[in-house]
Amino acid sequence: MQIRREEPGDHEAVLEINRRAFGDQGAVVAALVDGLRRDDPEALSLVAVDGDRVTGHVMCTRSLLDAPPRLVDVQVLSPLAVLPGHQRQGTGSALVGAAIEAVAAGGAPLLFLEGDPAYYSRLGFTPGGEHGFRKPSLRIPDAAFQVVRLPAYEPWMTGTLVYSATFWEYDCVGLR
Image (cartoon, one colour):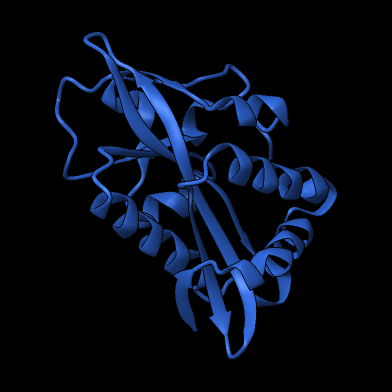
């Protein structure tokens, strides 16, 4: 398996992976991916490739942390999707690890997500509330609101995560 940046020819495969991985919500998540691409042209989009087949996808996009002194550019990891036949084989973990490295290398201080704490805690994420962060919506369970503090993080960076408008446009806040 290889992890690399998504290329233009991967676009349809990425949408199909998200449709299949998210079941009944797959069409909405695929539309979210297109919306995030449109609204954040600098978004980090990575794919897992097995042979010549794209089997997984992760995306990180810009959001804001409303910290008392000023707004801080941060990243949100969403969505993470792996084809059903390739799940539970390390593809998702490899994608998340590569995303964390890339976001850190890009200078972002924080990477947030909504997800299963049992899964993401293995990958370095911790509950956001434990670090003074407030979730952007009451629809997000406290345990699912998670963060990784990256090397550019400074202790004054606390406050409320403000999702980009795209997550609200597609009603993908608190989506499970």
